[in-house]
Length: 219
Ligand SMILES: Nc1ncnc2c1ncn2[C@@H]1O[C@H](COP(=O)(O)OP(=O)(O)OP(=O)(O)O)[C@@H](O)[C@H]1O
Image (cartoon, rainbow, N blue to C red; front, side, top):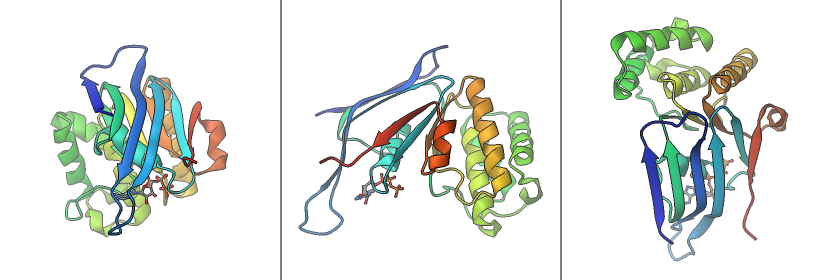
């Protein structure tokens, strides 16, 4: 089956921002002379503006694989992905540069997003206050604790106010206060029209999600 990805620049006002149909993904085996592993087989999903959608399932069910395909950092073998608008992505392992300070990290990502100096400074101040990492702005990434690194990872994913925010277990290592702050923020973003897609492991979270996609192993 042929794999396609379609990306349109601007997001429509009140519509589906991500649509995935019949996604197939097989990984080559990491062990020589053994079979390849089929991880996704006919996965369908739709994400609307303003909703908080959960992707759940057992370890190894393919949640990160699906999200990486939706974001566009991983190829798929079959099916089609259609995305509209801008995307913010918070991967499970922070993708940050150890030698940069937190402020420099925001400048780097902000210029990549095409933001002005003022917009970058404003987003950095707002998110540092909100997620409580103001005191670490001059720290290098490799001097941060795991939880604070995760906060910066989340901050740079949403600093450009994306239409779709994709989060792969974004709160790993957050203390309780930050975890609650994170959920307030996710709800606010959704109320303003952002589509928030989140990989979740916590049963407690199910009530916070508008819709849930559960991945299960193919029989
Ligand atoms: N690069 C790769 N090469 C080969 N197999 C891979 C690769 N990446 C992932 N896999 C396999 O694909 C399957 C799905 O992995 P994935 O990380 O998507 O699962 P997950 O549902 O996100 O798991 P978890 O809850 O543990 O984070 C697993 O069996 C994993 O070992």
